[in-house]
Amino acid sequence: MKKNKGFGLVGVLILVVAVLAVGGVAYYTGKNANKAPENKGCLPATAPWIKVVSPNGGETYVAGQQITVEWTSCNVLAPIYLSLKRQDPNQVLENNNDNGLIYPWVLGTDGTANDGSEQVTLPLASDSNILLGQHYYVTATSSGNYSVNPPTWETDNSDSLFTIQ
Image: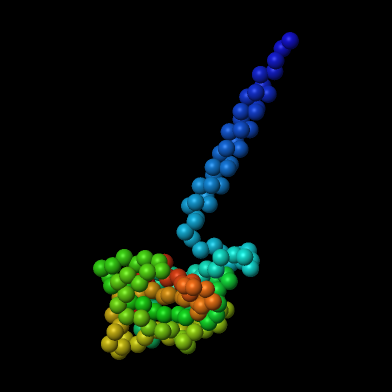
């Protein structure tokens, strides 16, 4: 009786492909674990998050210019608080960490609707705390959930510094 050796090879090949597919998904999921998800698929059970979209680093603005700050979010409480922060150029910008913070400005009103964008005016060059150059980032923060102990809120910074000239 002859045995068909081709079936054994096909079985091994299917097993290898399955292992590679599962490993690839696990790698991709782990690679993106620290990134805020996109607004697609925000369900009531999704953990809350907020993500600054713009300005997100590398832009150049003029002091006193009106700009649009944009963000995406999921299951966060309004209002959203926006602030411009000047970073010590000798410190590294770390997300959700005010390491090196020198001076914050409230942007727009003291809290805005969670609609994903707000027109704001940058400080004037005559402001004694403004330092022209690439030393700025925006922070978006939710109003917070004070029904839990300790209270929680979501916050995100621009990914990189931008310039005010």
